[in-house]
Image (cartoon, rainbow, N blue to C red; front, side, top):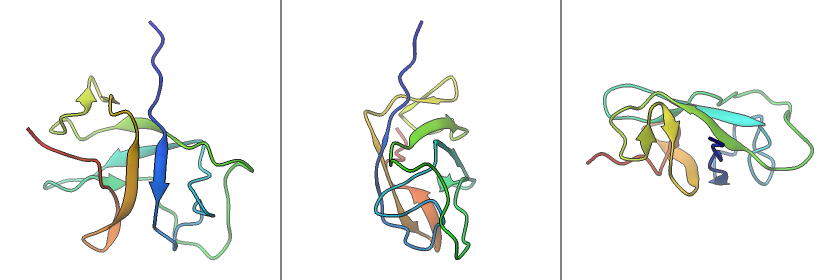
Length: 96
């Protein structure tokens, strides 16, 4: 079975090295604890990194309490990343 990873449709975290008018990481990891879904790929450096084209996807998600999580894979159509609780977070995260 082929799994299509959902794209990162928006990232508003300007302080992340992968964000240059969109996420340029190949794939991100969503992690976190206590009801927070943090972007585990967030890198706060002054240099820019990643791929030349912005096509980031969700590679893994450890937030098993999210309604979009199925066997540690994100099944949302796309996700948005932004600041929440002073860190880069998956804003698409939702519990049942």
